[in-house]
Amino acid sequence: MTHKTVASVEHAPPAHWVGDGFHVRPLFAGKAFTPAVSPFLMLDYAAPVNFPPRPGNPPGVGPHPHRGFETVTIVYQGEIEHRDSAGHSGKIGAGDVQWMTAARGVVHDEFHSKEQSAKGGLVSMVQLWVNLPAKDKMSNPRYQTLLAADIPTVALGEDGTLRVIAGEFAGHKGPAMTFSPVSVWDVRLNGGGATEIPFARGHRSMIPVLDGEVRIGGRSFKAGDVVFLSEDGDAVALEATREAKLLVLTGEPINEPIAHYGPFVMNTQAELRQAVEDFRAGRMGDLAA
Ligand code: MN
Image (tube, rainbow, N blue to C red):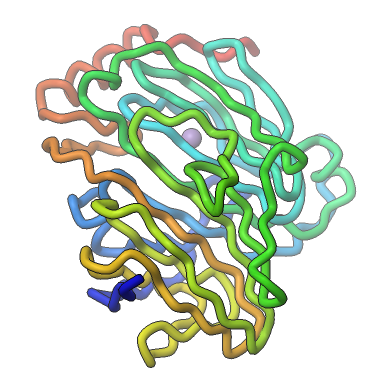
């Protein structure tokens, strides 16, 4: 195996609020919605925030649309509840993942669950946007609830664990169905832990550091850094100087134009105008009151 090297690094700007429920740092920073992160688009990380109890009035984000991509929510702490105009609804807690394919369009909301908000407490999560190939952008919305129990956890020797949400690692296949080849791995490294992670060739690969500190190629990276790896090489050597929480994201780049406006990601400006028009005309549906 030859090691990938560090090609570039993004440092996330400070956190901002999404609605009143999610205090997120946009980890891809200046590379969000560019070919550099393809097939991904954007990555928001909400580090743990302790919310006071708010019975009957859960924090979150009210109804809003999406078209042309998928939203992947990984919950680390707390419980999140959502509903969408395709009739899906559900709750996900620590370790669970919601993989929502907006495709031709949904309207949804995202809140702390009623129970979570009644008792208050820590909420931490990630939301990753995964682009769809042009041919799938107008397909039917789909919703996958991936419960922690269905996500394989692979031991990295004595040095940590890797949860396979999507893609395949060491013979373990993640439960997520995807439209293009994508790997999403949730990795914990113990302090002092060192490991080598093999990758599929031809994939773009990046390592967002969510907590702690890791060393790659003799350099140190901390929470809020996203390490973009070189195209060459088929493995990365990771060392945690202290306990670390990270993601490993890899995927085959989608080499198609990216047109982005707010919650819509299409290929052309005309398709974005159509998305706005379809949303306004109620063609992405509505949430029952
Ligand atoms: Mn949303």
